Amino acid sequence: MNIVALFKLVPDLVEELEIDGNGTALNMDFLRLIINEFDDHAIEQAILLKERGGAQVSILGPDIEGVEDVLYTAASKGADRLIKLTGDFQGKANNHAMARAVTSALKELQPDLILTGVQANTDLDGSLGPLLAEYLDMPYVGYVSGVKVADGKVITRKEYPGGLVAEMEIKLPAVLGIQAAEQPPRYIAVAKVRQAMKTATIEVRTLAESDLSGGSTIRRMFKPEAGTRAEMIEGSAEEVTTRLLDIFKEIGVL
Image (tube, rainbow, N blue to C red):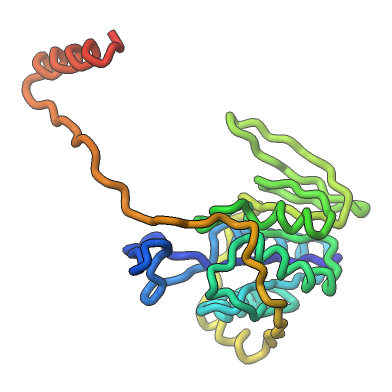
């Protein structure tokens, strides 16, 4: 079985985010990028499928700062092929552009199953999975939290709001948007990653020039302005209760 897992690097939201001088994008000069959390789960799910039933796992990521660390980490987990995609990824490539560009590489790899994170904190124009499925003419299921493979099909565990869970059977080849792997992404020691750097090989594939059409147009980015401040109610329990009742009456709750 041929499995391909894709990932992207996104801003670390623990860092302080700054808007650039144009007011339409984040200032990336000092911003730390990390693997998208859901993509990390997609890679873990791919490795689990390999360990369970045998498969070749290829990991694809865009050539921006930090991509090689992610690829070598995937190799130390058990990935077979590491592929770095070169192209205009610094030019505000949106998911539509990424899907179109990656499609050619995926057609060459001829995967039976494509796994990608169900969403990312930088998604403004839709998630990558459904777009890839459209361009590759494959079925897509998102918000997947479990995958089983049998007889040329996959059985996915899909979660819905309210605690509802469904099992769906999809004929391969297919694209899945992973919300959570069947187990948390495994921890890999730095020493093991360094060992992979000495033995694993990263393939480089150059993508066609990006067509940036189809995405969202950002006209302005700004930090939310502070609205009405919260009222801190002080006093005894009786005084606080009386004030709360007055507030409820003012806003029409009582």
